[in-house]
Length: 42
Image 1 (tube, helix red, strand yellow):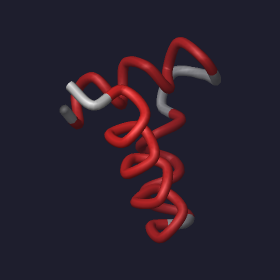
Image 2 (cartoon, helix red, strand yellow):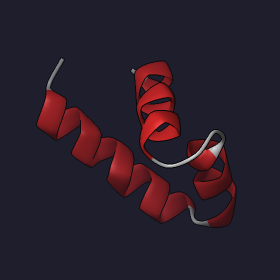
Image 3 (tube, helix red, strand yellow):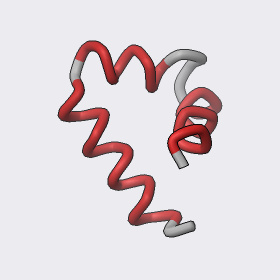
Image 4 (cartoon, rainbow, N blue to C red):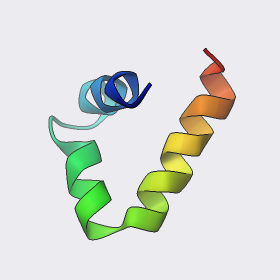
């Protein structure tokens, strides 16, 4: 799932967005990942 989240955010924002966010703001990264899981519920 993390790979899909990273690919998704790379397409929406820019390549490396998820990695940058994880380093700069881990709490927001976790919140966005959880939102992704809740919305797309794979």
